[in-house]
Length: 240
Image 1: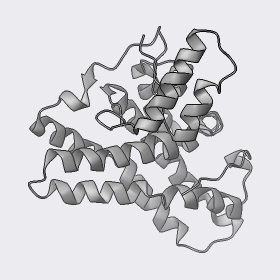
Image 2: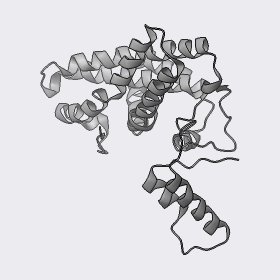
Image 3: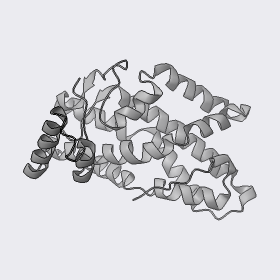
Image 4: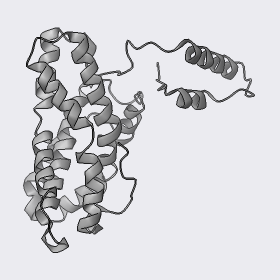
């Protein structure tokens, strides 16, 4: 589901505009993925099945929902800073910021599957977790307060209200956003490559290899490597 690309600051949105921005986020397939993981954790599920369910969850959250919420981070933090009413939420934000290891640019680069040289690489590799460790990780993940906050937003969205009466919804959005920061902070300690173990189609590998060869031999007549990768849906990763 494609998210809203609007640039209007949340604090300036009317109730209708706020709803239009929220709906693609809270109705995203991410929350279906989370429900599937919950179901799988209630049974003795094969590790491969759990791994695939987590991959779908991670891509939906990290590359889509979290990316959209991050676009409004400065605006939302300014709202929290502007009013003593949100002191508790602001304290939680300060706690997250004190624990963050990646720089703002590093967080953006990580979404592209790489890391900045000056930013630390996560110390825990998810694929290296034991079966019990992986299940424990998933339990913690899907029981995050982020999902309780999501449910509250959904509940308030179901209530018809006028613009002047939408403060409960806005406050629920602020809580939802802070929970997102906490969830992302939790994931920061884990190294995960959603493409690990997936096979690249022979024609894609051949095209990429040829592009690399042309680039290294200064034959710029061929198509750029980034263009080829984008066409075939391959995420380029830094190996240094």
